[in-house]
Image (cartoon, one colour):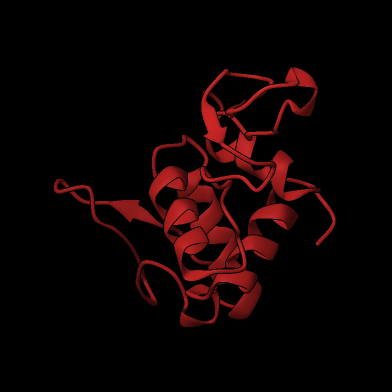
Length: 126
């Protein structure tokens, strides 16, 4: 699974910007959504880099909006502590927790492990 494919899982209504270099004039625009990107081929508006802390922020912020988020947290817990099986629940304030602690296991609160876990969870290759 590419980062572009992961982006569309996280942001199904978003746009992975790509420069339309065939425009022939400046500024360059995204060939998908038309957003002004740059005066040159180096893009001003960046796509998320899922290996950075900013990319981790995108994964956490956008992932929480999806109906598969609780199952993903269970997947992460069961990957590092397979026994007992972890079941996540949401309290009345929207805080997700499980019987071994709150939120994610610490092993996944880093950009690359989070990205790889999301790709594996959604059936892609790490």
